[in-house]
Length: 157
Length: 265
Image 1 (cartoon, rainbow over the protein chains, first blue to last red):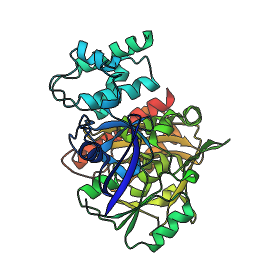
Image 2: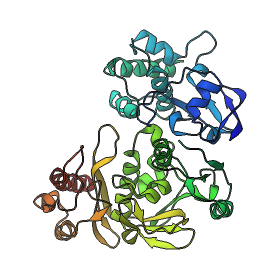
Image 3: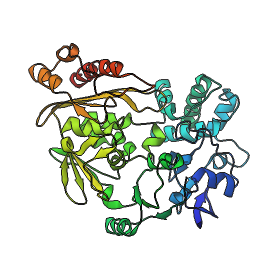
């Protein structure tokens, strides 16, 4: 059955139609055309689809769009300030924290949630936090470096 | 995923009424088991009743002798709770080991134990501490709650509302996770609990079970050495692509030893 779902996405109220069984990630990508959020495994493991719902990072492939009805959703498209990259995005850029870039939106959304709870994480804490985000290019080394650099930058800001 | 009707009741009464009126309903809280199962078409309910917004299921409180966790409390909330960390550190530690950060932001205690996955972590804490499950109908001792593979003492439509964990004298949980799924290949919860020594094993068998021989040994001497030479029979243990039964049997002793050491730390 076709239903109407309304949520605040990146600060803007967005309404769209979908089915009850439509996943949040599908609604974001196909209905709202916000394709920065990626679908990797579709089995809650890889983290390419991480977005924030009411401030918490979640895997949007394992949530229904209708479950986000009335809630605040932030995707990678809502992270930068206009043309100015968010310090986390800038840090990934400067530290070569990506190669193919497929996992990057999820990595950034996940990392932002880490710094919200732990603004000064150790390398080990960063690695443990990234348990649910898979990258098949970098070996994680530069991702960890990027997040640590962002933590420094954001603490100084 | 097959089509279904979606409901988001705001009270337990409404949830139960909708359940009663539906053809083949399923409750969903965090959805981290049912949605993947529906994607695989292993489950195809006619109605999904989302109880994730029901305030009555979200309580988390520490009383003088018990920690009471609502069924709708997310793993992240238990893992990050200072109250839980000081009352039963092993329980907060266990919650922090479930899945990954994003899974913990959605998954709930009630969902985990209603599903009763053989490799879930929470069953070890319930049986390891001698917890009591409260439902919309009655209370059930954790020892009587987990029956078999994905099978619990819950009746059809019976809903877990909270779990009461008695504070132990000391306790710890150690798990050997599957590196991809983070489910327990073997997890062992060891406690000097209010009603005596408890050793609860998850991941290894069809459902969580206690190891009487280890409990007796720990009652004599609460040291890693006390359990180090206890061999577990692999007769009824799980064998799959991740670990064969005798390897799981071996891991039970290893994890038990480490859990005792951690409880003494």
